[in-house]
Length: 459
Ligand code: 5AD
Ligand code: SF4
Image 1 (tube, rainbow, N blue to C red):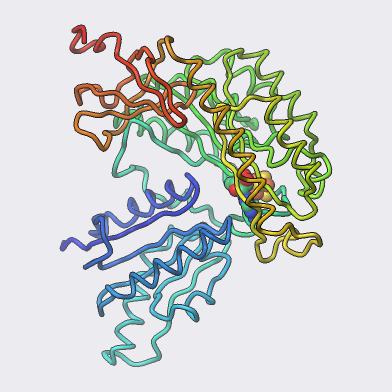
Image 2: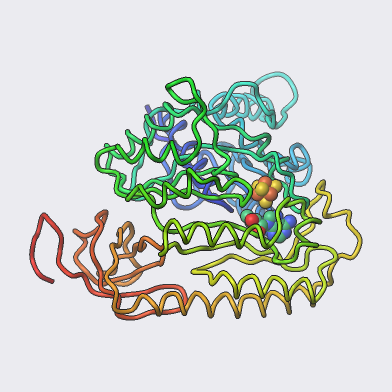
């Protein structure tokens, strides 16, 4: 079989990166091997994100660049949430795009590629009929997970497994319920099998993914519905799996079973990404979040009671329609009350088709920018303070990547702090005890106590 070249680029969330990985797994048996640049590719896939306008614009500017490399044999596919949201409109704006697909149909890629080839031949006059692009943005009755290959073709020390997808919550700013579809939980056995294979191939940490991952309610092997806490209890039994994480969670779905999992299961890391978006009850209501700031603070308090060293992160949106300075002050107050280890923050971006885009009182750009600046100053100060507090402590760090500098390794502490050290490459893929010596805004560094097990030498 001749090797074909695949260039695949992902934008946005970790679920998209997981999907891209799975697409490469599907295409591998067809002879596709990944290359790092679009030049000379037989197939280009842009796995897109629709969450904010900026992410969407990026796709069109990247498509323009790819067009320069497009020859007769290159197939260009737009996958992911922009594909789902914009569908055929993409082909009207960029007629050189051959395939548009959504997040729920990528198991059908081989068939779409064959159709695109036939369509290309038509265009070149080698066959009869009009040349047309291939569009597949269905929400099929079958689950794509049942059609994905069992094996992941590449496995790293830190691996990702989608366990839940979609969202039924309809926050008024968010496109996810429209692009990813209704909430769906994979059955427990399928997840355990996938995790088992990853661990056998060398994964040490697994992050369970879902747009509403803690709303997970999958069919268990015992005939009952299992929640995320129960699932992680079962996964913790896999020999060789050292760490479990999950993202992204919704405050309304934090149940006690999950909190107990943080206390009782050593593999479950003491870190939780729990987006609140705003600290103002008025704005939370307009966002249709269906919880208050007080409810969120209670959850944080309860989690800390179960696991005192629990660290938190969140997402924030500034400038949601109607947000006043007073509402914004409530967000700052909430941040002060929680004390985050890290966080993501964004200016509100009105998304077509969402209720927020039609609301009155859209906040002017300059006010959004000013508020975002103040919010980020506070969050950055908290992150630095969190990192500084770890100086002098010894943390187990799982090193999963090499750094840009010679001999540098990168990894994460249990609290998800980015950590870099200069050390032998043999520490890659291992959990190493590191004494933290320095803290920065976005990372910490330190020295290994000893090189573990195999080498057994002092560093
Ligand atoms: N504008 C700005 N940020 C958004 N997010 C989702 N939709 C929007 C939007 N329309 C942010 C939220 C969410 C994160 C993934 O992206 O904070 O938690
Ligand atoms: Fe979007 Fe809200 Fe669903 Fe999260 S919970 S994916 S923010 S609609």
